[in-house]
Length: 275
Image 1 (tube, rainbow, N blue to C red):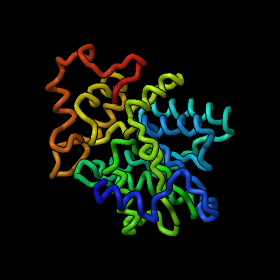
Image 2: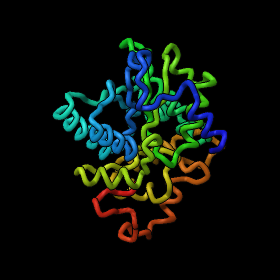
Image 3: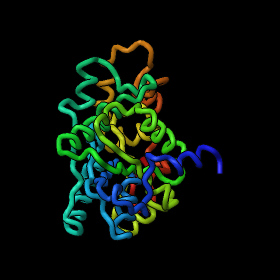
Image 4: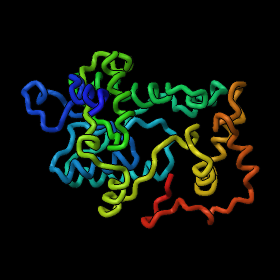
């Protein structure tokens, strides 16, 4: 066992599912639902184990693709019928897209920063928790078994007090998929067997999207693609070439006009697009 793993396992900020102390029982379990494969798979694994978190909450940037919103709606019906719960949806007053258009800029990730998540994911959830008196919690995060390094970075932020948006919230972090050693491939298989279909969740204009994802967006959601291009063209940033950071979405797609979506290998047996 390396030192990072040892420190992770022994951190006072990490929660494990079998903890049974009276102090831990007072904490509300809060599932920060991401909308994608990992969080959906974790939801069904909780159900299989006969447990559902106290609070399920999704921070909506206002820029998810329609299939993600439809997926959440379907999950909410399943959750309510079986558990009498729903995924709470929170958001900032101004969407990230509208903010970028107003400021004539691009999402911070186009410049290598991660403040999008801070402002439009972490902040609205933290605000909702404080407003509703949930300040002693276990925060459940859906990083899968292959994302230990990502989980370790998240833990370091909490240990060092860097999560400034979550002030006045006493929390422990729980990474169930790492604890259960569940991979994304295994989760997707289980999701499909249950009769659901989960895809990668992200804003339709996310700078982290690859060329294949931009092509899929253009083919399946042309209106959203055009909105993303309008953002890119309206940006006055001079130190990035476009939404692709080192490349322009519009420029790349114009170069790629002869590309045939039929040649893509992104469609799987369940019918899901491999975003």
